[in-house]
Length: 96
Image 1 (cartoon, rainbow, N blue to C red):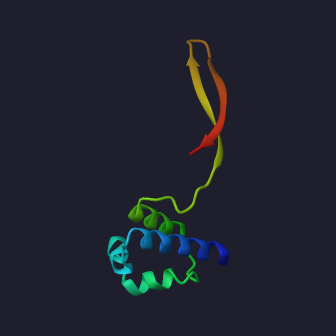
Image 2: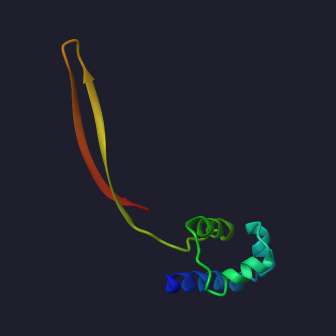
Image 3: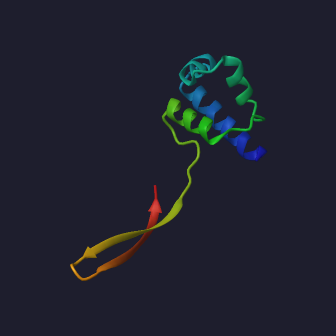
């Protein structure tokens, strides 16, 4: 967990440096105090998915890329006067 938090902090710091954006400007975009953002960027902060998503939105980047396999079922119900039948089709793939 610590390694992941540190990696996120380093990545955010690099992006801020590349964009010549101050911690204060970033804090304003995040509606946070500059001192809170400074704590985050030490790498010891335990990030929540919510805070990561907000940082991604503020910076316009993906900080974490997760490839997920998904499966879903499409259910089509046929109704006739006599009975009701269901047809299933299974699909799978990768979400992006």
